[in-house]
Image 1 (cartoon, helix red, strand yellow):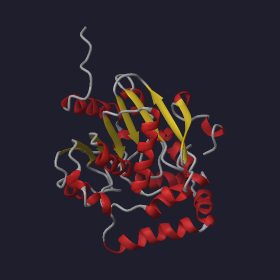
Image 2 (image 1 turned 90 degrees about the vertical axis):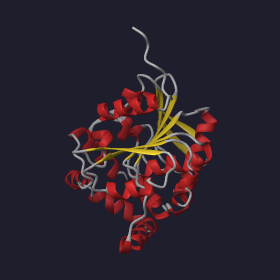
Image 3 (image 1 turned 120 degrees about the horizontal axis):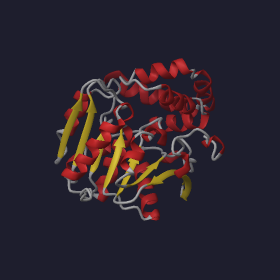
Length: 291
């Protein structure tokens, strides 16, 4: 996505800015006052994923949402740093540079894995929305990463995908996750899917993605982890997440019927209430003002 040319029509663009923190030039949306919450989107998404949740959380918190390297409006500065550990390190460096001290990391899908990786060194509570916490099983375990690597090597692959990403195809991809979004949400995903650099960086992330290091250290995450699942998630089966979360020392899980992988986009108001309740239970959120 071209900065700032493509900002027109982007959710909450009035609080968007770019920050150079090497090796990347990050796109950040920042709003609200109070304790800081850091929002980390999933693979292939961007800050638009938080369009409904961001203003609700900003009513009581200082909220920071970032685009991952090369995705959305963040300019990729080092192609080799698109894997789980490097992205967690680079995001932590950005937070340190800007003086952000989040009371909680909120991650969706692959963003939840990044948040957990960050918590290994920062011991910050993590709120996971439909976390992607397990590598593919069986034939997909080698086929999908290999396919992603081949696509990322071929400079034409991103252009071919972007050129063929019609609105109907994007809608089918979204619905394939078990979620249903209104036209606005589908239009934003279509904008991302038709942007060559965004697609290319997402493919690089897929090619370098490995959860092995994180999965072997789940017992080292001593901070509280709270998980929200959509029961109809077809991208990351809830049963898989339940098995992995059993290995976390302090983890609780809530499951909502009738919602899919993009639970926070389908039900932002309900998700915001759940997050506020979770923060209050962890005594991380300020008490409501007396009338």
